[in-house]
Length: 356
Image (cartoon, rainbow, N blue to C red; front, side, top):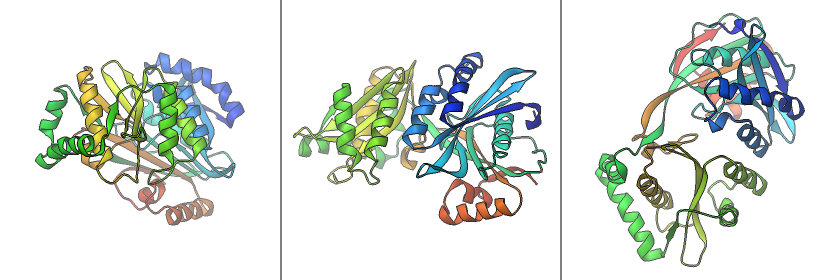
């Protein structure tokens, strides 16, 4: 399906985007995505606000009826738009609400429509999708590049915790057992599988500043609150003998699946691998509850990712044609040489289609 077959309406900014959200919620149910928390309006607005960005919602219609929605956010600096509009997390979730077979076309149509806004020079989007886009149509105002990459986010627990350990490399298997025993024996660390709201707030407050990359207080409060408001939400943690929180993990559970959104570890605690200790407690706990798989929202470490199922993600970068687009691409590539725009423009990954 080509992008021009959709009629698009763009709702930019908080006031206008709010008007579109009831239609977004209706589309989630009509397309069978009502259980996808990352496309829910509440989740989208909470995350957008927490990162001090501005929502850009695109509703797509066919024959005068709502057919799809794409959830973007405008990157802002000091409250002002930078001209970059993005959508989807690193693993391609939370971007598009559309029937199977129309997701790629909906994203392309929405991105090209957003690029018509006078203050936008770059649109970048990621979606979890295996289908290769059809050759892009030529649009006089835009250059666009699609590329594909592999992602690993779904970890099977169907054979229980011991089954998971059996799949690990011998050294990793030893580490899972060793670090937990050491944490308990030498440092008095204790696992708390269910945190009350007040404990969750306290843990986030204690840990946010001790991270390798500290999270601002306002942002951490909003992110934690967004998770707690998600149906099936949970929080767990590890604290030491003095009652100080050393690690925190939160997310939500749906039938047979646990979604991990956030993990915070005390960066100053170097006596044991807190990440591995928490992972051991968490996976053993979830397996004991009968959870069949764990989904790491936004991705997980390379060490654990190798044991997750292989999936695919598509990335799109669309930029204005002409000197403005060239300058924008050059500037973004210099400011963030490892960023999405730079990597796609350098041709890394597998190029799929280019509108030229």
